[in-house]
Length: 129
Image (cartoon, rainbow, N blue to C red):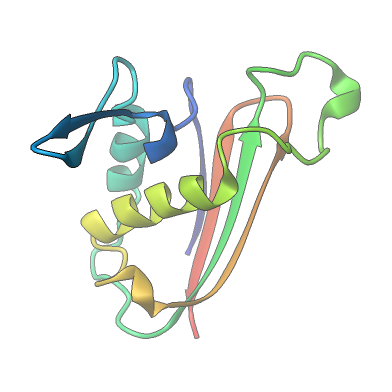
């Protein structure tokens, strides 16, 4: 299963959300504009009729454009925030929520990269082993 979608706003991660403390315990909350509704909507639109039941390979390409207008940067790695591991975890959690697989522990191979390009988009390829 392979699909891609374009985003008006790139997803935010837990590191970009707010933290408050209640009774000494941290509580995370969504700051204004960090709910990732567009990402959730698009992932729900592509969800499979039946989730994968075996081990999975996940290949994820995340293309950022909002900070780069210089075409010379397109295709080059994006070494700045948000962190790739946090983006990956965020997308995996949504994919679990929408039934792509029962749990992200089913992922045995994960390839992810983030780079600059001409438009904001996410490309996802997921296959059973």
